[in-house]
Image (tube, rainbow, N blue to C red; front, side, top):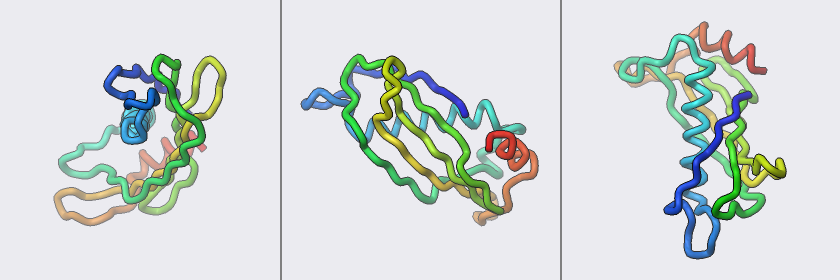
Length: 131
């Protein structure tokens, strides 16, 4: 599992005083990028083969208020032949309260041929260490 501290921006907060749901998805994307940088070896060559998101599901459990210390926790939940599922949570780092959780299915993809491909073996090994 990786932990990615999030720097909340003033613009992330809507007129109701909480972080907008769209911005929470951006936080999850920051967590994904950090997770991939720490776990995937070799790193994807995004012009040739990499990953695409095919499904995302979020549960908004509690409001995130401006100034709360938050982080995104990211871990592998399931690994298939061509895809894997990431489980992520946005948590208040002071209280450990889970604010939002997300599941995303990502597929290995050949961007030149425009087809899905089996997960690269080094990635599969890296994911296996995370389970």
